[in-house]
Amino acid sequence: MSGSIRSNIRGDLFGGVTAAVVALPLALAFGVSSGIGAIAGLYGAICVGLFAALFGGTSTQISGPTGPMTVVMAAVFTQFVAIDPQSGPILAFTVVIMSGALQILFGLCRLGKYITLVPFPVISGFMSGIGVIIILLQLGPLLGHDAQADVLTVVIVLPQLISDMNANALMLGAGALLLLYCWPSRLAHLVPSPLVTLFVGTLLSIWVFQDNSLAVIGEIPTGLPQLQWPVFEPELALAMLKASMILAALGSIDSLLTSLVADNMTKTHHDSDRELIGQGIGNMAAGFIGGLPGAGATMRTVVNIRAGGKTPLSGAIHSLILLAVVMGAGPLAEQIPHAVLAGILIKVGLDIIDWKFLRRLHRAPLFVVCLMLLVFGLTVFVDLVTAVLVGVFLANIITVKRLADTQVAALEVISRENLQSELLTVRENELLCRAQGRILLYHFNGPVSYGAAKGITRKLQQESQFDALILDFSRVPMIDVSTAIAIEDMIVDSQAAQREVYVIGTNDVVHNVLSRMQILSLLPEHCLHERREAALETAYSQLSRVMPG
Image (cartoon, rainbow, N blue to C red; front, side, top):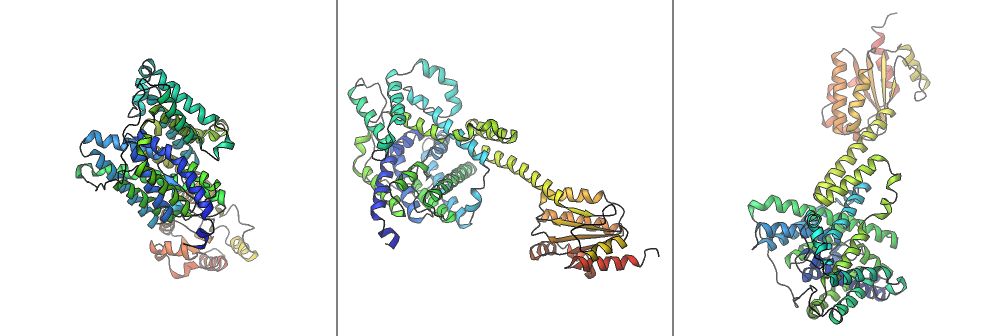
């Protein structure tokens, strides 16, 4: 046991116990909501929580089933059970195992630093969309009916659900939601509101509503789970891969965003790639025992930190306590009404919605508003992967366009109309003036990306009265292949017009790209220089041979 763990055993014990108390009702609720069963939520909380704590890169993070992951898993489970009622559940858990393997691959490939680069409007849109999905899917249990499979079905049958609602279930669920919001914050440090709601709601259903009109969790297995070996069906391989990629991407984003929250609270820095590996191992383990996939859980992580948790020991304690519940306390949860769980999950959905950004949406630029609402709509009514891909694509297109405009504007062209520049030394300005505009100097300023390549080429095409072209890369830290190809076109077109081209000031990165693309081989040795003055001297010397007296 390391010194840091030994020095904080008391804090980690309190943090782990408190996190387990918060996690218990949520794990049960997520399990029921997924359609797999309450025990699946507990298995997922145990596996993901334990292995992410042991192998992850965020020391204070508590992991387990989350609202976004449960929404996607419910859809995956429904999809494969509809395809094959017999082996559908095993196929769904095979998808969970595959998603865990993908997360491990993400970590090994060091993709952690890129996953959190998803633009904020996209994150806000899909998180708010997931919150709305959770709320809509819980309207059925709240009104005393079975949960519906998807949002569109809920919207279609909602009038019927309302007309045939179970008043007892609605009162119990609404009361649970009210208690969650009204539970005093000073008491929440001692007893979390979800646990209180679970106990109070269950006792009320037993003592007050004794007519058996309320749906309850029912039998919960106790003891250790059985291993479920993965099953692959070739004709479903594409569907399984797509579903696993959605789970892996969402779990990675969800976990790393929670890691950032933990960093802000503890003033530490997590290891993104290691965190992905830990989450992947946890999700693979969950898939092998029929547990829900999970991710870093923000609320449980915050509770752990506030209770004193500082090391991975708190996450392991949280999982071991839940394991003890599974081993012997399952029957105690069998009488929990679905309506109470619906109330708890509706509160989860409301908390996931990005109210902070929505309140300021009218102040945001029009494109940001449209992007957020588009991702929100696609998340709710299509699917998460489409929403994120479309959102990231549109956001990147606009970002690239703005960067390209900035890069083209930063390009300084010294031509016949502008023979003096503060950029140049006295000698360089003198050489340009003596060349009488026959030397065109292209001075790139800053990185040049593929988005600016066309604009740079178009700018050159506007210049026609020159005999030598100097491409100055002395202030360019990097270029990409698209820019290199654009530069090749500039060189080839200029040489075709009997104009000599000089390339100067390339650093190792720029030189490497131009060399690998065989562009520098288009130029003779005397056209490659490190210094701008040397290139101007050479160009002027070449031109002076043919310049009139």
